[in-house]
Length: 137
Image 1: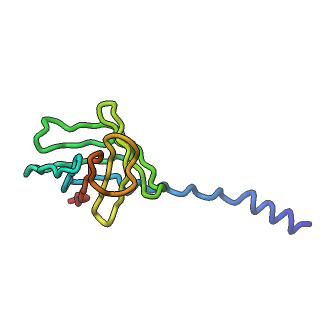
Image 2: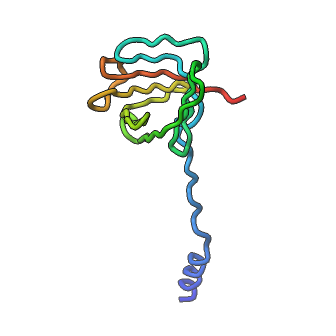
Image 3: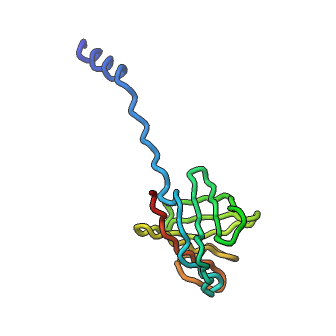
């Protein structure tokens, strides 16, 4: 009986398990845009840096080399979907898509109209982005 009471006392007095730290999404960080294909047509990339920064708070900021200032909006994503899903919002419009990260390369395929794409291909209804993670100094 004493052993049972002692065992219960130890369990009750034991510290609660630590909450697992939530790791930031692998999307979070700065990316430089390497190529863009919109409506099946490759977009010319100017010689200045075009970047996108995904933040842990669900916002993203884009800076185009020819833009006067950065543009910030919202994104959501589901990394558990297969393939992982993303939705970018710009000027009130929502662009559902999919993404994949392979090493330091991020590929995003967004639809301009219709259903969320299920493949990473440039079509007459999609935008296909290829980006590289910017290295921290």
